[in-house]
Length: 66
Length: 66
DNA sequence: TCCAAATGTAAAGTTGATTTTACATTTGGA
DNA sequence: TCCAAATGTAAAATCAACTTTACATTTGGA
Image 1 (cartoon, helix red, strand yellow):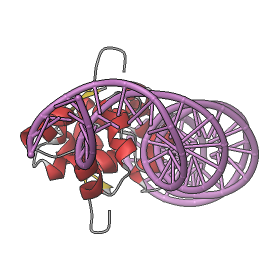
Image 2 (cartoon, protein in one colour):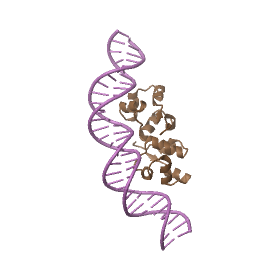
Image 3 (spheres, protein in one colour):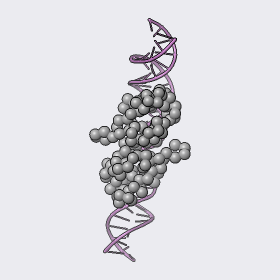
Image 4 (cartoon, helix red, strand yellow):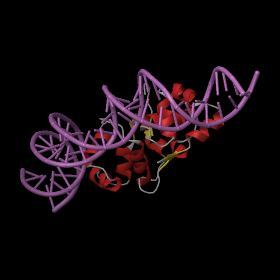
């Protein structure tokens, strides 16, 4: 699963810590998601999409193999 | 988090077992999601949306409190 | 150049998603 | 009515998401 969080964050000029605070998780959680160490839960993914007022499907996409 | 899987399944005339097979999880997993016992992972949620050719946001929505 | 902010990562622990097995209940159709 | 398919649920086990703490590296701007 790939995601465009880093780009969306750049567009909105938010740091990882900013985003983390907005969605109520730790900064490391955001970092881990961006660096592909793990996939966010659906609830978190929806919250992140909400911050960027984007559809989840724009932000998160399946890849070959998942 | 609420979801409209049961309705989508009815529209597509699929049993829980059918859907489970299509997305590669156990039937109980689908049942548990439909009955609200737990929330699917993002990967699973995306796969389910793909089966129904719907946007994730149509199928899964945050509620007050999450 | 230097410092502060931002980012990357790691280890240990907790919680929640998912599986497997197994059984009970419901429901639609012959 | 009766049977088979569909659905609901429960317990135990496994794995992945997420937290906290802590530290190292990178980067942009004064």
